[in-house]
Amino acid sequence: MEGTNNVVLLDFWASSFGMRLRIALSLKEIQYEEREENLFDKSPLLLEMNFVHKKIPVLIHNGKPICESLIILEYIDQVWHDKYPLLSSDPYDRFQARFWADYIDRRSIYSIGRRVWSGKGEDQEEAKKEFIEILKTLEGELGDKTYFGGDDNLGFVDVALVPFTSWFYSYETCANFSIEAECPKLVAWAKRCMQIENVSNSLPHHHKIYAYVFELKHKFGLASLA
Image (tube, rainbow, N blue to C red; front, side, top):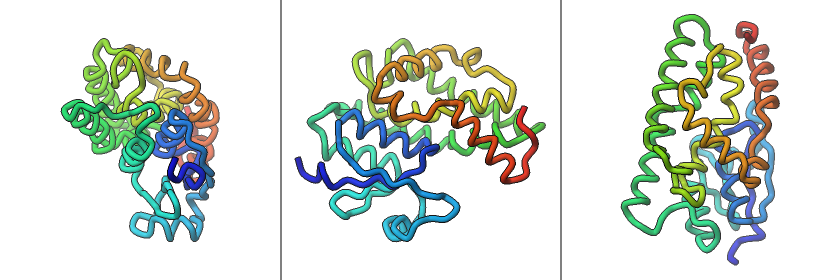
């Protein structure tokens, strides 16, 4: 298959956006080289391949860069479409999947999550409220389905969202609340996803994420962890 042996992923282990691509590449059984980036000292290759935003992740396929995780995710799905399709062949279903994946990023789950683990006082409480509101909306879209993609397989939205759940433990510990108590169906969905080896092997353990959060809080002189 074209380009199967010439795929490079510029990534950082704790990046939920990079985790999306690791899951997709694993599901599709694509061999690739992963190059770990230092976000505080970016490599010349990253600055060359993503000269506009200078951010990870970047997928380099046959020497050509593709940037922005949802765009890369769709690229992977189209180029390697014969193995584990993430987007439906139905135009309406594809539109819905793109809409909800876009919702996840437009509502800035990453940025709000950062406020949850790094904030304090009223700002942290407001971030928690906003974070749960977003998750409840997503839980409503999930409904009684096994996965966002349906009852059989992970889909585009599942792959876009599940990496953020690896940070849930850190959010809960730093802000003293329970996501499962607020969104039990969504947490049950996350646990189902983690039973799939392609997912669990692509995500770091939540204790490793928590240790990284602890490191960041000290690096930036934030208050001690709860």
